[in-house]
Length: 193
Image 1 (cartoon, one colour):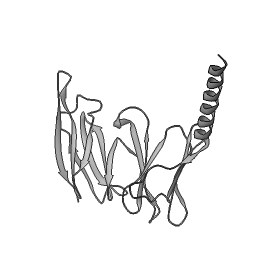
Image 2 (cartoon, helix red, strand yellow; image 1 turned 90 degrees about the vertical axis):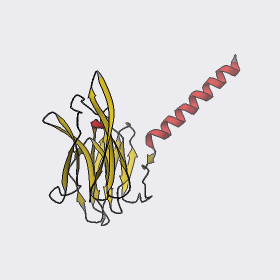
Image 3 (cartoon, rainbow, N blue to C red; image 1 turned 60 degrees about the vertical axis):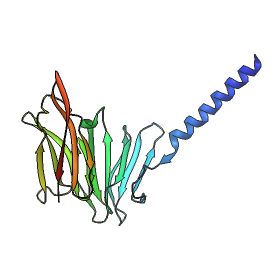
């Protein structure tokens, strides 16, 4: 009986050590290019997150000291990083901000972001009863902005869009079509500059 109590005490002690280490240990997200000197992510003691994107000149471009949701920071190109926060379930509940660490620029906030490549962001909008895939220049929509209607997807609050890049300047979007009685999946390939 005493051996079981000792094992239980050791197990509880080990769990407490692990939990206390997790709550105060800073960590960084994975970066596809391995260049994480431009951002930090820290888990706070209250299990919120602190993060910041830092320009090459040392200025903080975007930050939050008490984010209740875990941020994901990815390197989109040589100088552009994205901060994405998932606020609920499903891709339609995310938002993202992009920072150009070379030129010290921060983008507008985008919602329902599917991805980004080079200087282009891909996101879904719902307007006038239809879903559209929007491709635009991350920092200036007057440079490039194009919307592709996702045909026959209006019956869905979230058409479960997935985006796959097919090399440079080409992407395929797969999404739900139909209605609650007849649901299917459709794919469309688009080109962009």
